[in-house]
Image (tube, rainbow, N blue to C red; front, side, top):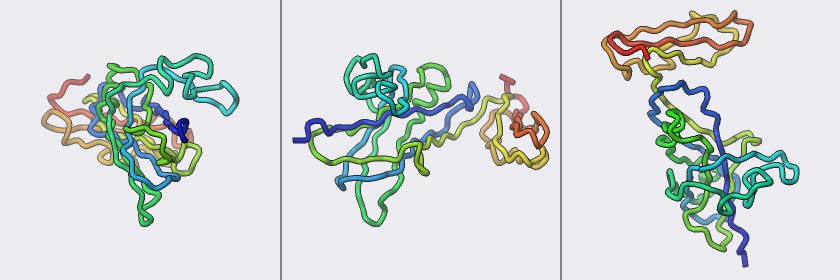
Length: 219
């Protein structure tokens, strides 16, 4: 029997680069398939409800099925999480598309994380029906060349500043504001924006993008 074959994944993303007050228009968790026994399954992501520690490979250094930090136990073995899944996706095997990237819509959770309404402890990925079969799916970890991704689109609060990733060789006039912000989605009647340099081009610092519409609150 395969009674102990059930596996779950736990993952978390740093959202500190998203400015306070931003409106999340979409947030998609993307996982690249690594291996499978070949059977279709419905996999769900559930919001984790307590903090946990990533292990470093040594014994008792981090999260396990029984422990959230290698020492202290979860309230329930397998992790503490919201019983209602944030999102589900049906994954199936095809020799013509494997390994593909599977996606889960986590926009509502990310909005709550950014707003500070819910603490960001990440998600647990698990099958909606866990059984003793070998119908497993493995996904690539962050150590792989195709790590997990959280793709987020958002509208910054009008009047706020947004850090713009850039090539350090670019000068301020070479950074295009329209490429980063959908100005039509901001309130007000007319848009204004500008690039503020945070250092010279050799410093490796980012630039700040100021966006505001006339008649809109400055935030």
